[in-house]
Image 1 (cartoon, rainbow, N blue to C red):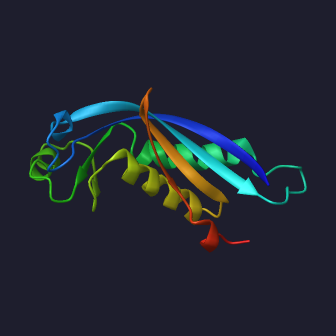
Image 2: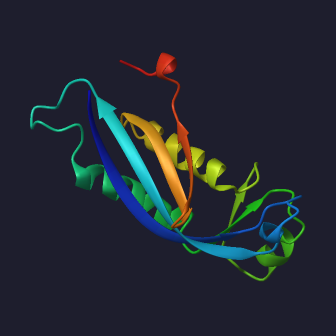
Length: 140
């Protein structure tokens, strides 16, 4: 099995509904997404995927969707206020945890036809959450 990883750095803000700690308040992170692709066979150039292909695909989407956006749950009471003020907000159906952001990115990469097996989000230098596919459901 061959694998490659690509790192994408971005900034986002969020808060977690019903959280008892500091994360219940609006705050931001300088995040790093680590996208891991795997393939049993290499392409004709000897690659799992060209780094620039996956990098451009993910970076463009993150820049347009998540970077310098406030990520909020659709039930967040501050959402209408921020939207009314013209702030950039990305609305999620789930709490915008690092785990759910990893899954969001994973699903986007998978929809692009890349052989993604895991996306990890470093919310801080010492805090990592990830989402990976179930090997039994992976396409061959």
